[in-house]
Length: 335
Ligand code: SF4
Image 1 (cartoon, protein in one colour):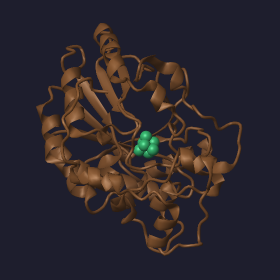
Image 2 (tube, rainbow, N blue to C red; image 1 turned 30 degrees about the vertical axis):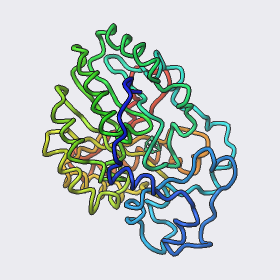
Image 3 (spheres, rainbow, N blue to C red; image 1 turned 90 degrees about the vertical axis):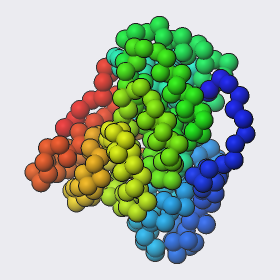
Image 4 (tube, helix red, strand yellow; image 1 turned 180 degrees about the vertical axis):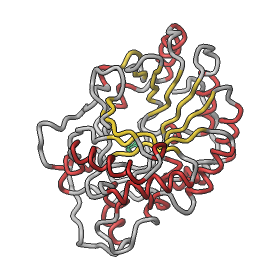
């Protein structure tokens, strides 16, 4: 997406880890001692949205546990093949919100850039799992058009880097992008939506930290963790490094059946986030995306869970239960 040609540079350790991510369900099962205990979906669905798990994330899964909450987020179960007409390919109306190549404008004062279609991990419930990134990336030839849109719309105060995962871009590309956005004076804040600090914490490199520190923007990073078991080991120093340079960290999670749909799970997640100086921000009800129906938790159950969590935690540790609805001026706060 960055217009200039970049010189070839050796891969960093996190990029090598990304290239070595596990992409075969049998390999993952065999590492966990679960051969023949789970059945993966096959065929087109897996081809279009393959398994993808960095080894560092797989290392946090419990050996021999078919119900491990990390495994369940990434393992392509045969349930994905079930047809449910309420579950669609573009559940939140992303395609209708595109105003320029790679630019989505849904809410006042903010614009979201789809910087890449790549992610370090493939979350099976992802609302963009069917998104046609190839048609929507602001390619080099269209980048100026997107920049012109951003320059002309002085109501935009905040840019959200999304994807895919914007931190899967190289440091050079990311720095070029942030520098160019920095030339637009009416943009005050940069929000980065990324799951990489959680699933591949080695991505938080010194050069990334320097890029963020050198930017004139106020920087907010919205990480994505669904379960306290994700927030251990190498994730701890990565998040600390970000808070040490005054990046404000928020977390968004998705309420997922059999993964985090208990009061205990939600409390543990909020407590853990608090220990790591991350504010629990949103708990999303599942976006009804095709192939993810088996993760769905009813809204009434979500409300009841949050009400119980609220009785046990300080208010600022209780995430807002939200749903994204196409055409609304903001996310709908359910509870
Ligand atoms: S990291 Fe985010 S964008 Fe990528 S698959 Fe997971 S939920 Fe989707």
